[in-house]
Image 1: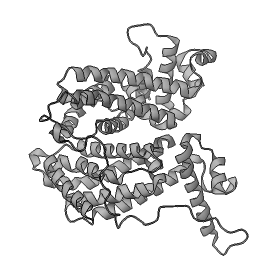
Image 2: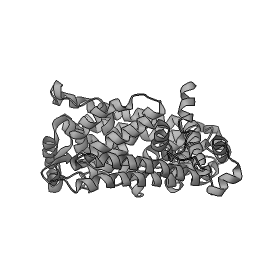
Image 3: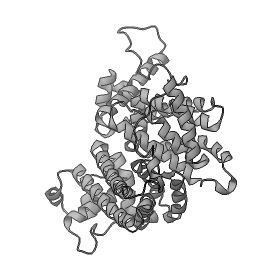
Image 4: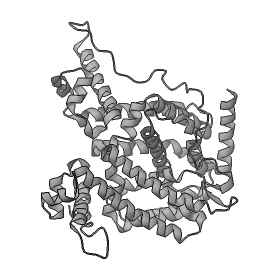
Length: 449
């Protein structure tokens, strides 16, 4: 309880240092404290003004509503992080821009854990506008790095992967640690720098820093030919089905209706009435199966996770070597999500809005996927093996890629990034040169087919 109190009061200060706190700044600090303590959904205006010590009319002098204050707080914290990263990058040679950004990001999280926790966690639960603000902030950080890279000699090695995705992966990696109040975050820096260095290639030879899609490979035999969909409506009148089968039909229609609505409106904006209307079931049927909206979405999330893991693991074990296994697993993984955009959206975009249970399940799924990378250590001499943190960082970055693609369009175009994801997985274990040679052989086969 004491540790929670310390985290809550750590932001009880002006967001702009060196000057007296204004009422607006106190309200922003109140928003951050309330969101960290209660989560985005429960951080209402009453909680914010209680933390800030101002009246309700004063709140509305500055902000139209809760979401207006929330986005303002996100932007304020992002500006502080951006300033820290600009300062860190400015003091290093341009070829070390990514490494300097990681140091600055971890240093910021270590010195300002409460506001960093807010930034890397709560926008993921805040709906489309908050997600847009998060993504704009990450894009601004990427521009700082890319501008420095423009000054790098083409022969100089720098990491050959999207800075935007690597930084998004860092946000995810730090998010769980900040939620737990984990100390000594700066101890992560050496392992993270070692991991990022494993992607270094001469700047003039880069292929993967821009997420330009490669040709999509043929459909994996492990991907079902038909996307997941709701069962048909039952005909009117009495039907020759057991009560259990009727209930399962209704349950699946509710789940798929919830997933479809999340694509259109986002989890936070959906009501149970919306779900029952689209599913064409009575509200009493809904409550006979689910206690609330969250439980219905958790069922969708569990279904998606099981299907994605079944498809990915089945393809993985069909490969003859570890690089081949990763290629096949990635092919099935990307194509399944591409064919099932509702699953991609619920699993990788909306999960944080569903509460702590879904966030924990997301963490568990990252751990499950990381197990597929363990075999890579057999390809590396013991004294040159990548740190264990690299497994978590790789999966977190893959999840960021899926999230970004799921948000960018109604159909996540992922299969064209199979080569990028394989480079991300293979390079720390077999080196960028061997990883590129393997990927080129696979792409050549795709072009011939």
